[in-house]
Length: 195
Length: 432
Image 1 (cartoon, chains in turn yellow, green):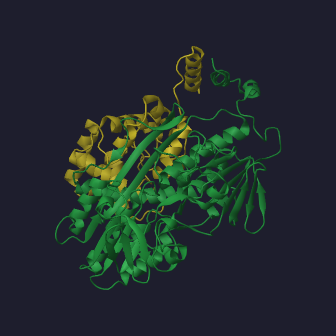
Image 2 (cartoon, each protein chain N blue to C red):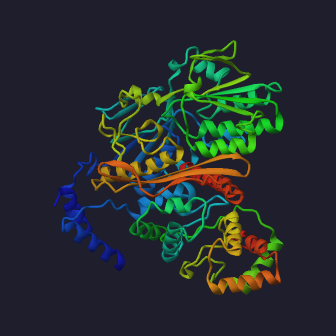
Image 3 (tube, helix red, strand yellow):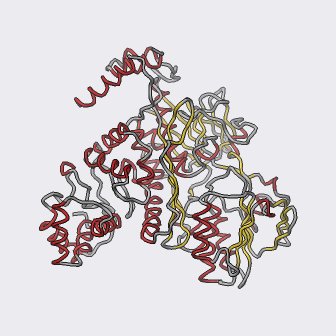
């Protein structure tokens, strides 16, 4: 709230000075343009494109900037992220942060693998991705109930180095894969189970 | 300080109530009992505009008038031709919109009385509006090809460029074609709905034939010299269907090489161009296009056959209080695509809500993303972000573009799956 007031005052001050009034679409106006791919208000019903509803503002800003700079590999998001200013990205991240986290519960999963995945999650992931990876304050991607293929892609990308991860995550992933080479499949089934 | 800026200034400081007296737009219904919007056409533009008006402002009464009980999406319909999708998978109804409180009327609009702000339907009903949103898609310039008309399209030589019964008919014709037969696709001049569509169609039909009728051929007769995603499509045709070799399943003839079609002999299943005649076993003519029928009846079109609009509100520059969105509008540089219509529908919805409430027109933002599937595991896309500046819609410099040309199997497989999620989400965003 305080942020909004400060931003609004700054905007007002800029306008009052008579400077060039740059178009500044609201977070909502920007967020609405994402919905065709990511679902209404960021709640995806597809299994390859992730939900972005309820993501932490910090995480979304970071992610969009990484797409924009090319630090994070993508098929299409790099091309799209380049269309937005820093202010745009902050505004749309603010909009999605206000939406409720969406869990896609219509995806198929293997119950036994999901159980095994839960044990793996609790052992290797839960410290940073709490409550199945659904807590915005973790400033990380949403895991439980998110798009199945997207999670497969993400894990594969972390593993083969096409996506960067923090050192402690790399260390844990390495340890997990050493113990269980099917860990990714189990984790994805756990997250897909939406628990 | 301009009037507009002063208003923003006051409003931003939380003095909105005071500022309202200085409203730039005189709202028709402010202080009155109702705010009425009539949306004509329940396709990708109209349906999403109706839904989003209700999402943004429940006090607006929205009536959507659509001629058909169900809508079949054009995107995805090429995969029906190859058997990768069913007709049911591209079929959508209006229960979702009713759930948002949209009054859905199945009827055909026959006239819009712009001065009386009234829409008239074929069944004799009339609907008053404060603002009307017209989203009728495209209609066809049958007169450009001698011998072609709607009844021929419905029964023998389809356009299948509005998904529905013609999609199923064309699919059945391809499936029952003789071994080694020829499918002819006549591709239209610009501008037309779904610029990559004819070339994805070519690929999807080739995908079916490759597995079911491998000696068959596809002849694409194009009015143009080049087309959307040209390098990606021709490389994909080459990768999967031998394009460019002696054994190619696909032959593409550009306009200057005889691809322009002037007439059709329906009984003889022959297309005639300036120089050559082409005989086919199955013929699909995608004709030149113009704005949907009602846009012409209502006088919303200019000499181009399309509807001039203001890019921030989509209000017609010909008739006040009527907005035109989607394929019928002159919305370039936005393409005539389903995603662009979705984006336009939301910009228009936000503007209409603001105008009805006497608020400032919001600064718009628009996106287009469009996926095509060349073969299973080989999806491609084009994307662009647009803004509104200097009184017009602009591509945001540095944004957007195509799937990289260099083939990357992992990325292409993901793009196909992303395309399917795109389908799920855009249809749910529009009809759900």
